[in-house]
Image (cartoon, rainbow, N blue to C red; front, side, top):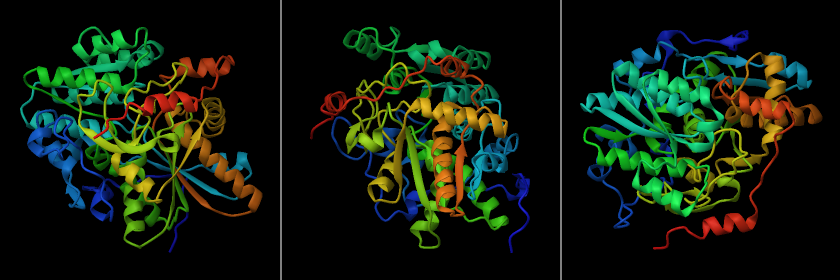
Length: 455
């Protein structure tokens, strides 16, 4: 029996999930394996352990275990900010005049300001458990770097962050939060690494990309004793950790008799989207329920909607394993006027396989329309959303307005991945009408895609 639904649904601490959910266990078509860039053979745990912590490498390759216990130390940390609220957007529904019911899972109730902390603390924990001195990573808009620096400070680990240069310049406050937590933050590409110097030579004046920053962070990790590399999205281990978002959402929905018709998430590398949809997707794969899943990406970096499904390097420097994914080519660099994160050239292998199987649909949206939706949302719901999250808001609002036209009473659930209080330069450009849209041409994408490895 359904209960009266409050504005905000908070689970009891006792209702928090104690295990992560691995959607790969229920996938009929498993994601293609990571390949060694030298031999083109599937990567082994031993090979991956040279870059990642060993337990994370094991999680990365495990596509059979459906549930993995969350260590007690991580659960204790989660309890500082989890469970996060599932919010009924009553005010937005009223403003839109829609019969649709709109819910959002809000992941911004922590100091890092986003969902990224769910995986950051897990990866930092496994590094600490392995006895490492520190970790290296990349960050785009800075949410992941902020979360990881916070987790490392908590556990007493050194943290080296390579931040996409355009974001380093456009988002100084996010950068300073990282430094406040003790992280060493370098704009990427930089002259501090061999691969950074090579990229600067090949692309002089470049504003950088996640692919560039990943290459630099990996180089430093493998050449520094006592360090390993950690990643904030894309990898299967990250989607595993982020499944707490979807598990909490599903528990809350079940508790109040809520049945989402569609579940919407922004899509850059796939961490938020994959974490939100995984438990619901598991039900769909097992034939227990049906949902429509929508991935929303920026028109300036449209890997799902305009990319190709192929093996590609995970980084611009071509030192990381090859992953089969929807990709624009590892050398693709998003336009500097792109104001948010979601800058990765490819998409999670898990999300890519689900998309290729027709289990997920995808849309790309232009950034001015995204900020229009963000502004309307902020004015009625009282939260200033991150630009990344606002991609999901835009499509959720579009779907709610369709319900207004048809009279359908659909239930919409989307992920509000974080807050936008460190993204005020972007909001300023939008408010001053200095923001423009950039959509790469077919010729630009063809040039980037033509560099895909052939074997």
